[in-house]
Amino acid sequence: MDLKGKRVSVIGAGKSGIAAAELLRCQGATVLVSELGRIGAEEAERLRELQIPFEQAGHSERVYDVDFCVISPGIPPYAEVVKTMQARSIPLFSEIEIASRFCKARIVGITGTDGKTTTSTLIHCICEKDGLQNGYRAYSVGNIGVPFSSMVLDMHAGDIAVVELSSYQLERSPTLRPDVAVITNITPDHLDRYAGDLSRYAAAKFRIYANQGAGDTLIYNEDDPLLREHFANKERFPFRIMPFGMELVAGGVPDSRLVFLEGDTLVVRTVDGNEPVLLTSEFLKNSFHGRHNISNVLAAVAVARALGIDNEVVRLALSEFKGVEHRQEYVMTVNGVDWVNDSKATNINAMRTALAAVPDTAVLIAGGRDKGNDYASIAALVRQKVSLLIALGESQEKILSAFKGIVAIKAATSLEHAVLLARDAAKAGQTVLFSPGCASFDMFKNFEDRGIQFKECVHQLPLW
Image 1 (cartoon, rainbow, N blue to C red):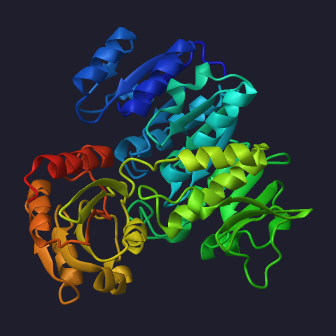
Image 2 (cartoon, rainbow, N blue to C red):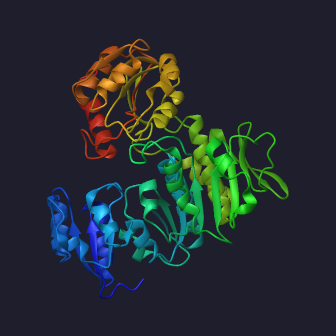
Image 3 (cartoon, one colour):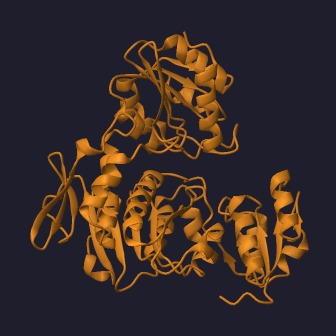
């Protein structure tokens, strides 16, 4: 990608926007960063250091006087700046797309509704351990929090870039071609962005394999009904397909390298027969539990097999894995009550998964910015697993209305208040589960900020 003399606008001054601007500037482009809101002091200082012009509190006409635009994944397709760009036939790319064009490393791309971050982290841990033995480096970038653009020039041929990909990022990545692509699952999420249409959301996810061909691998969750149907006719795809699942699907003909669970053993089916890899007891610990995490590990094992990584490396890496921050993260135990931070749960399916993993019953703290959630879909599980539901945030009234008569409910005026209410209600043997099921942007910068504040509340407030 020859950028010398190219004029580029970057819309959005978050981490990925600034990283893209720096990469573009380094490669010879003339760059303008434009932010609809205010740019943070730290970000503004960084742009000044890089001598990259920027504007804030609105987009001027200058953003359209360009050869192409790099746009933040958080900006929806119906935003005025997007519509104007399209009307003027200005190409729109994601930060992921720009970085991928400079990537010399092998790319492992991971997308899906839930499990992306855990699966990406597992894969990175395995690749990192293998790289130490075999002389390459593994990088964890993308939606996981580190912009691809900030690391791509450090990558060399033979390295591995583990790239977590959201549907938003995939929308504007027309040439992205992962060597190995993973789809963890597809369930309703972000339907506010996709006009309530699950098929449009799924189509964005399926862009992960749009450019894959011979020599590439697509790994998907055979337990997911939507994915199972989509990939039923495997012969129509030009790349190798490796389904994984908890068990073999009745009536189906499994791929020769299907990864699955047989009793308590994770198994890879090869042309020579079933090959055991490791026991669930080797990675299921107090900080990393739940049936859903077995699915995440199956995906990681499939990736390791696709990359040719030895089983012993996989076993060592997974046995040392301690879980992911903000994803069913154990915080502490007080008076027999476990406190769990699941701030990464930004949709109903993630909340469902967290509740299913609770060993007994829970006091559930939920709420935030609603994304078109269907709370009725988890009503039965909430009735079974939740002794008290504490609602907060913009979706508070919707949650209170949805669960009235199903479970005891209380309204909290703040996260601190919610923690206090939970402390007073929880009994020994129970779990206080902070699993919002909603986006964080009504009260917090992002889900990380939300999770950090929750943990601070738990540690600082008098809990006995």
